[in-house]
Amino acid sequence: MIRNARPADLDAIAALHARARATYYRDHIPEEAYAGTAELRRTREGWDRAVARADGGVLCAKQDGELTGVAAFRPVDGEMTLTQLHVEPAHWRRGIGAALHEACLTAWRRAGVRRARLEVYEHNLRAQSFYTAHG
Image 1 (cartoon, rainbow, N blue to C red):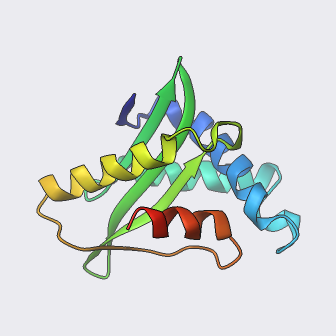
Image 2: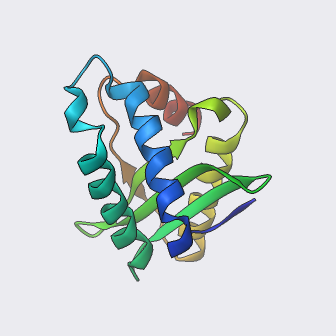
């Protein structure tokens, strides 16, 4: 099930985000840049701002009551931007990312958005492959 994120989801979103980031940042940047208590707090604050935004969206994928993925988007420099898309590493390759991606596209189409952009960390080859496969 995919739905809009709620403030009650923030702890789970931040923790999922931290686990997902660790998979692609590990061995590329110092661990303190993506892990630890202070970084988790900063991450949660960022997601709190994203959930509260009126001009964007945060979507959660849940399965059996467990948060399995999250995506966020908002306008950046006048262009709709997919700012985050993370899937719980234990749930990779199960269609959750594809479902979140499609839910973003649906939301954008409903809002009249015809073009969107994204940025992907250069060492995150898994994400690059995912976005290439999904156009």
